[in-house]
Image (cartoon, rainbow, N blue to C red):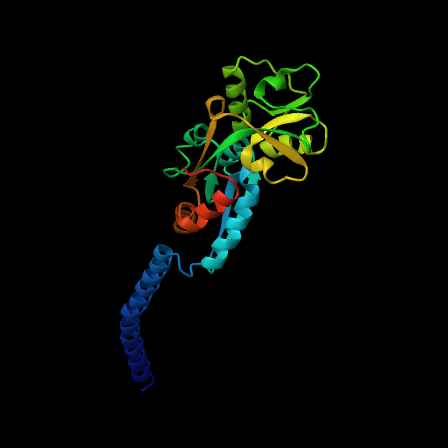
Length: 266
C-alpha cells in the first residue's frame, strides 16, 4: 500500500509539472512583450542612463535631464561633462555609459566602432569673451594679437581650441595664449576670474555668465560653426532607453531648451 500511494503521488507530480510548464512559458512571453512595449514606447521601463556630454552643454543639459525625467517616469539621467577629447578617451577605455554628445563631428566620427549612428542636435559659434565692461576695448579678432593682451585659448586637441585655431589662422593672426585649457568652461573661468583679458569660447558659454563677462561677436565670415552630434554607445546596458533619449534630443521640447540657451538649429 505505501508503494501504491507513492506511485500515485509521483504520477500527480508529473501531471502538475506538465501543466505548469506551458503556463510559465506563457507568463515569460507576456512579461517580455510588456518589457518590449515599454522600451518602444518610452514608458515605465526602469533605467538609469549615463550620458557623456561636452562641457558647453552643462547648463542646458541639466535642464533637459530634469524635463526628460519628468516626462519619462522610471528613467533617470546622469551626466558626465568634460572636453570632447576627454569623453572620447573615456569611451575607448570602456567607462560605463549609455550615450555620448560631443562638440564636433570629428571626435564622434573617430568613435564609429563604439557608437550608433550619430544625429546632430545643435550648432554653435565662437565669441570673444572679455572681462565685464570689456575694459581692454576689444572689438575684433585682430585685437587678440596685441602683445599687451593676456589671451587664453583651449588646447588644440579640444574642439573649441581647434575652432579657435581655425578662425585665427584664417585671419593670419598670431596669438600667444597665456594658457591652453582642457575645455571651454576652463577658458571662460580664466576670463571670469580676471586671469586673462580675453578668450575664445562658444556663444552659449559666454551667455551663462552675463554679469561676469562680455561677449564680442565675431562676423559669420570669420567664424566657425560647431556641430553637436549625439549617439548611443554600443556598450550600453540600457540600449532602448539610451536610444529613446538620443531621439528625444531632436524633439521640439528639447530643441526649445537648446534655442533658449543660445544654440542654433542643427
